[in-house]
Image 1 (tube, one colour):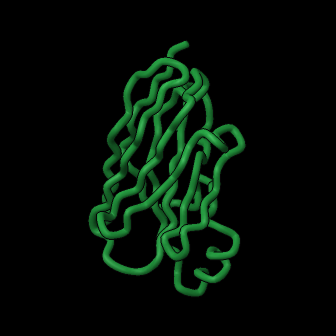
Image 2 (cartoon, helix red, strand yellow):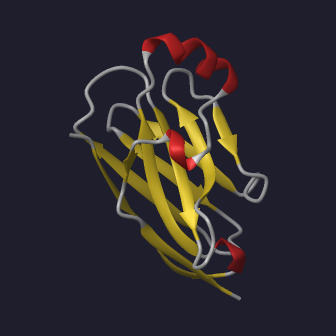
Length: 134
């Protein structure tokens, strides 16, 4: 059974930085799509950034481009999200998510990148709160 455990959330002032971590337990082989999603109160969960372990292709939501960086340490089975220049509108619960696509999909994912839709991911962490004050 795959388990994802996030850490690193907290409260910062606008302009500050945070680094989120997501430890992956139980996965042993194959390529994977990993993503960070966030959900603010009363809003839908949105994809923030994704990364493909099979080549490192990344996706970023327009709202975070140039400020957030997703990365992955395959040896440590850990996913990161470096968040800089944080804004009050970044306040949300942040979730780590994982999907393990079949081998037949690896070539297209390597070209197109991992999806950023919530329904494309089967495994989720418990979430970590990020609060940015103005």
